[in-house]
Image (tube, rainbow, N blue to C red; front, side, top):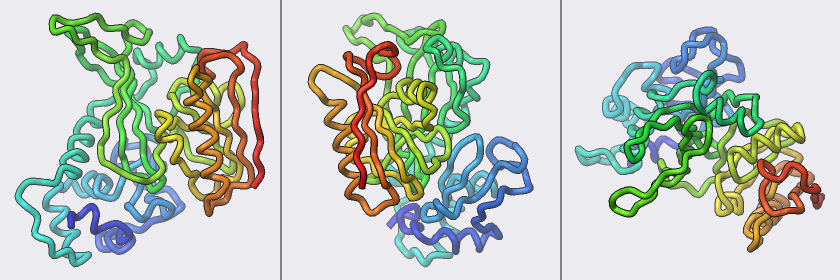
Amino acid sequence: MSTIEKSEGRWAEIYQHFGLMPSTQHWIKECPFCGKKKSFRISPDKIQYGGSICTCGEYNGIQTLMQITSRDFKSLCDEIDGIIGNQYQQSSEPSQRESQIVKYNRYRRTLKKVKGTGVELYLNNRGIYKMPKLAMGAGVETVNGIKCDVMVCLATTNSGFPCYLHRTYIINGQKAVFKENSKGWIAPTKKLTRIVETTESTAIRFHYHDQELGVAEGVETAKMAELKYGVRTWSLLNTSIMKRFVCPDGVKRLVIFADTDKKGAGHAAAFACAHKNLIANNDITSVIVRWREKLGDFADTEYSRLMEWTFNK
């Protein structure tokens, strides 16, 4: 079994070995990722995967220790194997899961904060002026020979493990529209990349949750719903992920902002999510499903009548 898989549930022991302990209090030292003081902590809530939190993002145990100790992936995993008694002899090549995480870490370091970039201009043009502090960064990529700003969002599990990267390509503050290339291929405006496969609930967590949490499919939809209704809202990326999403512990009121589309996929996913949370063994007491009367989502149908249905547990 790989180090990452074997270490699940053993991170309190691993951190103690390295002189670190989970705490609800922030570090007095600088964050090892962004350098900000008194903003970083190793979260007891995410200790199964060694999760750490800062205003710059959320990280798993391997990422955290690599950053703090300046160790490479292999030597760190060898030491962790000794701590947890993992005797499995891995091949000289890292597993696909490990390779993807290393690749993600390398890509993440190229990203900038959103403020002052083409991503901020794009969000401003959509009517969104409050930039998220977590889970979103700004990058630059070349697509079909065109240099684009890229809005990059990280989706994580309830335990803080990275699982998807969502990219939106932007040109001059507008969502990019690419022309067909010489091979007849048209590049997509958005791109979803899986980092690792997971069965856990997945979301782009723009902020920490409270007793009330909103969820929506798209990134822009989530931010616009949050702006209009004052509910901290996460993006669930698509209908498939929404159907299987279960709130983390501590959330008592869930508000689901459903897309209104011709074939009812948005409604089907929203009500499936509502049902899953109402029967789950969690802290939910009520679920509200909201949608706009006209076709579209909350980022596109501002003046359409609001509809809602409330379920109590």
